[in-house]
Amino acid sequence: MADKHPQENAWFYRGNITSISAAVIIAIAGSAWGALNWEKFTLAEKTILIVLVISVVTIIGILVYYFFCLKKQFDVISKKLESVEEPRRYDNWDQVQPRIRELISDSFIHSELTELQCVGVALHVSWKTVRECLENHLEKYKTYPNVKICLKVLRKDSVHWEKMGVDWKRRNNSFYDGANLFCNQIKGVPNVSLHVYDYEYTPNWHGVLINKSHLFRSSCLYRNNEFTVHKNPYVYFLAGANNYSNMQIDEFQYWFQFGSREIIKNYSHE
Image (cartoon, rainbow, N blue to C red; front, side, top):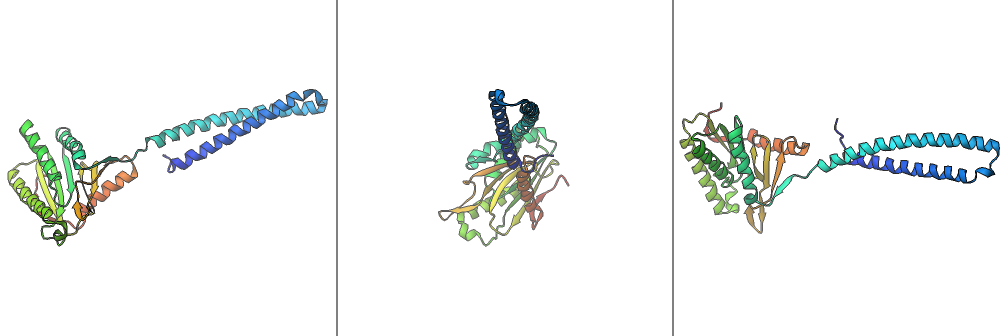
């Protein structure tokens, strides 16, 4: 079973190793003192000293063995700590987009079914990337990949548009027009499905999840009175990497299961 607190264990073993080293040094110093003063001892004292030396040597042997056992465990834990990396960070959408495109395109080729989930305000960059990957695959292989797309976007009649600005409202309207157009384009295509859900509130974060394994998540926030989305940093979470990554992916998927109103749909995998 994996250690629940590897950092604490590492310090525990480090402390034990230090204590054992000190004990060995003290034992050696005591034996050296006895050897230097050997001629001053009586026969009885020499006998006692010999017994003590044998005992000390035995104890030192045990301590050395214990030392190396602890050292081995300490090295294992140290490597475990080194392997725990912080999530990969991207400065903005322009930096993360090539990696997202690569994962989607590879999945289209190698996966039996590609599942894509995107949450955003207007999805004007993530949805565009998904469409471009689909179009490139169609152009190269003359067929659409087997894909299920779920999108969640801010409602067209949301009360929050006024404070976000007319540009965001325009992008949102453009998304809905494009999604409806895409549904018409894939009508009758058996291996492509699109599900669009909306929500009322302004999101705190947005992102893209690929095959329930690769999550690229960012924040929605105001900078200098400007509402920003794709200009903000993205963090990458990989399923199975650690409990925190799994939690982030689970929470991302919850938003498609709770309070969702499906407004555009083109089923093919049901």
